[in-house]
Length: 117
Length: 112
Image 1 (cartoon, rainbow over the protein chains, first blue to last red):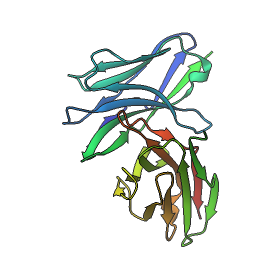
Image 2: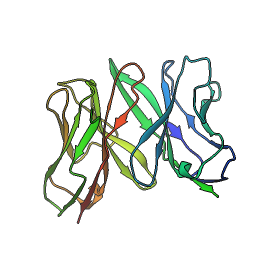
Image 3: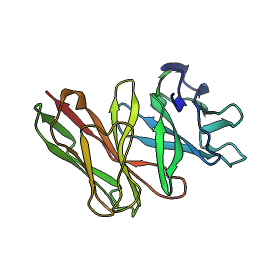
Image 4: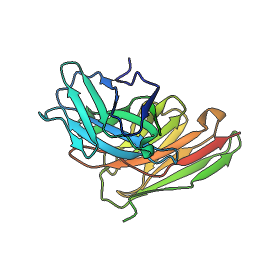
């Protein structure tokens, strides 16, 4: 079973509008972390935002915010005021403990966002 | 401070050849990881090393071996390359407490 599900293979948004990228996760751990990464066409992986499972407030970083709904096991990324440079692949990831002090991330398959002028 | 570096950036191999992908980080991170990225599959974990001297299998370890040479360096070896190993390979490192991954620039490998 997939641990991270991104149901939107592709999304389109008009420049200056807001867009929400969906992510649901599956874990039985109480302590976990959720991440969003951006991968532009140049290929590098860029960290955007992090939410810990015990964090009561939704994480925000500039134009990025993470809509964390723990009971629904969802961690959607909201990008406000989209810019042309936001066109990229976006990956949701979850950190889990894999035994002792071992931690690893599991990534979703990604959502390709295209911002139209 | 170079972060995470990977060599080479590009490589073409023939089926059956071997090669080692090199990764180094200068951030004093304990944990290091190797991923492969294929179209439509996201990033899949091949092997990881929680600390110097330890390595563990990830989701797709078959056909690969790793060595954690020291705290800085974590190499990935393909003993007998196969066309199914054509992919982009990323190395990453992370640190307690969030384990946010810091990625290298990637290696694009083609096996013919």
